[in-house]
Length: 107
Length: 122
Picture 1 (tube, one colour):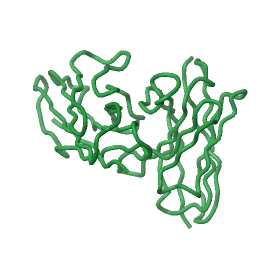
Picture 2 (cartoon, chains in turn cyan, orange):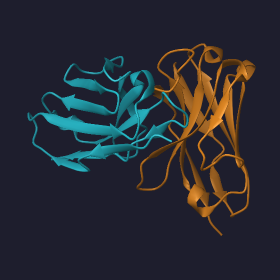
Picture 3 (cartoon, chains in turn red, blue):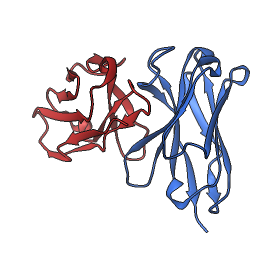
Picture 4 (cartoon, helix red, strand yellow):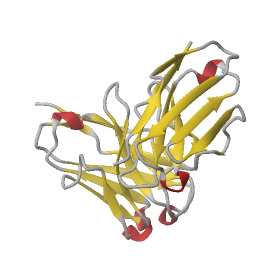
């Protein structure tokens, strides 16, 4: 199976700063089928990005995804207070579909 | 209203079984891949299984293959997860989810239910 490794585990930033989250895959992600999710405590995850760089419906422009093959990045342009959460990457190009272990973005 | 609503969770003894259900509304259910994903307490997300439109394809994570069975009833707009031989490590919130687009690949989950809690304990 494809193992996704996210870094850093925790990112400590302030509102207004730029956040850069990384997701590395143990082998190439087919068709760049790579998604990013945001999860807040007690809630279901929320899809931010799919196909590596397509923003999901209703997602603010400050969220952007990039990358291909084995290296992917989620960038949050300027952190808003509501952006402090855990972020997961997920590949869905090769079964079994797999998630990364998550990056916590904290104040 | 576009939503997914899970049910069927509860407290079960090791070795027991459960059938989780997920009822969909507000979209053409039969056009979409449906998946189950779980999250153990304080842990990350784990994809478990998907089922394609018309139940043509199913797939499972290695960790649950042979114990979990996914199915769907398009007439009832529902997807199910039969969980057998439950283990303590199966304790988690179980979510059903729908892909961002209809058809393949179906694996970027744009819609999630609220989750149903499964607790396995003696």
